[in-house]
Length: 73
View 1 (spheres, rainbow, N blue to C red):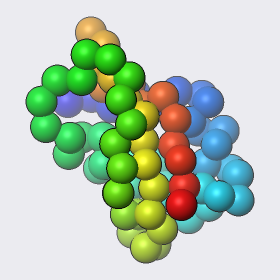
View 2: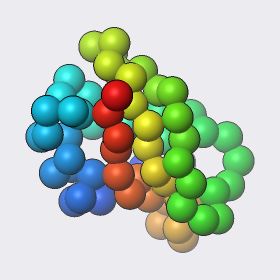
View 3: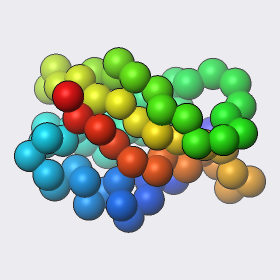
């Protein structure tokens, strides 16, 4: 499944709370969610390769899986 990351989510990766979370970490997390996501839903408890824990908010659109935002822990 194609993962699309919004500009808002990319901008948040520059914040201190989300540092050490990479685009690849987000792709792996969003791509690993099974099933269909019809409405924006928060998924918790993903780990970046750096060990940083994060949540994502995602939903499915016709073009793929849209990652709306990233929340670092």
